[in-house]
Amino acid sequence: MAPKPSHLMEIIAEATTSLFCFIYTGKPLHNAIVWNDIRTSSTVDRILANIPGRNINHFKEICGLPISPHLPALKIHRLMENVLAVKKACKGNRCRAVTVRSWIISNLIKGKLHVTDVTNALLTLLMNISTLQWNRTLLNAFSIVAEMLPQIRSSSEIYGKITDNRTSLLSIKISGILGNQQASLLGQMCMKPRQPNTYSDGCFLLCNTGNKSIISEHGLSTTIAHKLGPNSPTTYALKGAIAVAGHALKWLENQVHILPRAVDAAKYAAAVFTTAGVYFVPAFKGLYALYWQKNARGLIIGLTQFSTKHHIVRAAMESICFQTRDSVKIMYQETEQEINKLHADGQLSTNNVLMQLQADAVGVPLFRSQLFVSISFGVAMCPAQAIGIDLCRFAPDKKEYSNVFYVKFNPASTAEDRQHRYGKWKRAIQRTFNWAIRPKVKSSPDSERRTPLSLLDDFELRKLYSNIFLEEFTCHEMMEYEIHLTQSSAEGFKPMHHIFYTTHYVESNELKLNK
Image (cartoon, rainbow, N blue to C red; front, side, top):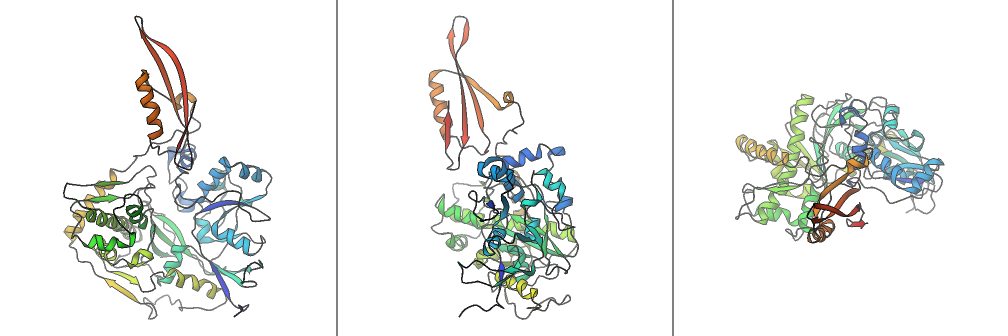
């Protein structure tokens, strides 16, 4: 049946994946940088070099966020520095900086509209959390001009009609834009301070704080839950972001082959009663809340000769739960609201063992939505609100809704056991801090960026030459090595050759060695 003009569309996509496109055609100028790409770590260092005390929370009072590699401001800045096509287009004012959401909308309306909503705009690290407008201080810090950014609108209003005749959706109204986790918050009816958790490749815990934006002093981010109309009040939330959740199980499957399939994790974890002292910190891309350690790296600790793959899988699942407990603890402190239950959805929430481990780790009941992906339900609310249809009658004093059903997981652990295991986890996670090499900032003199290695004989040089190819560099800046060849004589060591090598990080994760 052909769609009726009254049909509505909501746009939802991953929030921080960023790219540049031409203004008039919408054609991308390069490949997008996805949300968990850590090549922007070096960009963070260059930005921090100009900030007092290299404080990652320097702008938090303005935007509620720390300076982190996963945020679009860093990705946009990096693209402007490193992609020639972007540099040229920016000079001629011929391009736009977009996230996936705003790019999709622009294409559906043939470039006539460049918009985003407040939930997505805040995540760029460029919006003032109070005024809901692009902030001049933030724009200047990242060398970005407001003209290349989308117009900021509410999460629920009529933005325009689809005019791209390549789709079967012609003339349908686009009437809602919302972040993934914010949609989960709505979909689970968390209209008063409660905590849903979305379990997927990453894990995100949100706590509705009402009309008050609380700037966290202990590692949480402040975000916008929703703004359901141009004249509606803004609802804020605290957010605990975990970079690696389900991705840890995929790593066990694809990289080390401990799991035949990631979906088998529950079976493997249930084969043992505990981790037998094994702890897994999946800091593959650094750590987000509460630590914001971009130079942290993953670790498995506590192994003995009796440790098995089942213990490691269970430890990987517990790592998700312990990181969630981190955020819950701080949410309780900063909202002064008792945390007496958790809500869960997302792909990983179908894992019953994980849900039970989560309830045990935090010590409160966990309610899993029978929708599993309640994001879809939350997404439907925004377009409906835009035309005056209140799907769930947002009664401010109503605590439960009869049309939303849950499966309940009660904690089976004791307070003593929870505290003991959490204490060991905290010891493990601290060992991951600052593990990666910090790249030198570009402004450093060349003399500071060169590392004299040693006085090498021929055998040592060949050994070094091969090791340069094998070494896995964690930083993405150019690493430079200065090698001095010497010759022994009666007078001592004399310079024989001077070779200067430069290694470049390339996207294939290989190294090129240039003489």
